[in-house]
Image (cartoon, rainbow, N blue to C red; front, side, top):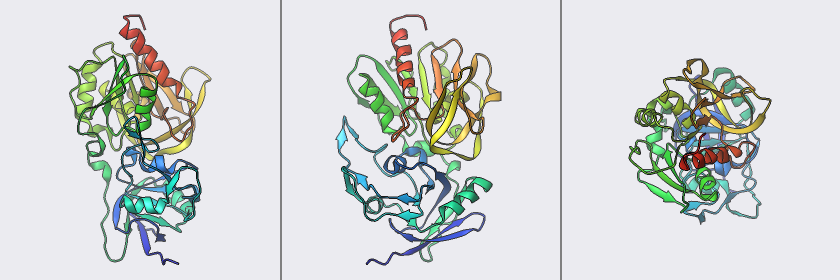
Length: 364
C-alpha cells in the first residue's frame, strides 16, 4: 500500500486542516471556494471560471467514476470544458481510488498528477464550508513540507487574459455566424451553437471584432473581476450602439452590465453549484440552474431601457439583464451546464431566433 504524503490547507484567518495527497505534490495558493455539485467534477475542474481557485467539493465522495478520455469531437475534447485542469488545487473529504464507469480511462488522482494539480483528501469539508459560508471566500494555501507559497488573491490579476484563446478559431460551417468573445469559454457553449448548425468564430478577450462579419455576438463566461476586462467592455459598449443581437453568460452578464454603465460587486462566497433556483422577472417561471461566479451585478445601477431578467431565489441577487427594445440579454447562470441541469438550455434557441430575425431584416 502506497503511503500518502501529508499536506496542510491553511486559511488566511489562521485555521489549518491536515489531509493526505492524492494528486500532484506541490505547494500552491489561491482563493478557497466551495462547490455543492454531486456530479460533474471533470467538467468543473476544467471550467476556466475556476482559474486561480482552490476548489472544495462539498459532496463527500469524489473520484468514484474516474475521468473520461480526451478524444476530440468537432475539434474539442468531448468530455471537458477546456483543454486542461483550471483549478489551483482540489480539496475533498473522501477520495475514491477505485473507480467504475463505462467511459473512464484513468483515476482522478492520476489525472491531477498528469495535470500537475494538487489534490488533498481526508479534510472535514463540512467544517471548512461552514467557515467559508460565515467568513466568505478567502485566500488559502496548500503546504507540502517546508515550502510555503504565501497567500495570494487571484482577483487582483487579469485572469481572463490567462485563460482566453490567443488566436481566432472557427468551428462549424453553418450559414449563421456567431462571434464568440472568449473570456474563458466553456466548450459546451461552443458545442451548443455548432450542434444547432451555426458557425462559431472564437476570438481573444481583447480582440477588436467590430469590423468582422457576423450575425450575432456572444460574450462568454470567465474567471475573476469583470472590471479587469476594460478592453472587452469598451468594444461591447460600441457594439451596443447597433441592433445586432447580443447574448452573454456568467462573466458575459457582468461585462454587458458594465458596458451599459451599471456596476458589479463581489459576492461573499459566490454561487457555485448545480442547484441554484432562479425566477424570470415578471413571471412565475422558475428554473434550476448551474452556476459558478464570485461577482454579481448591482441591479440598482441599471438605467435607461435595461432591466433585470432573472433573480436568484435564494438570496435575491441579479441573475440576468435584458434590453426592453433591442435583442440583447444575458444571464448569470449556465444554460449550457454539463453535467446539468438543462432547464435553461432553451435560451440558446431564443437567442438564435433573435439572430434569424435580425439576419432577415425582420422586426424583433
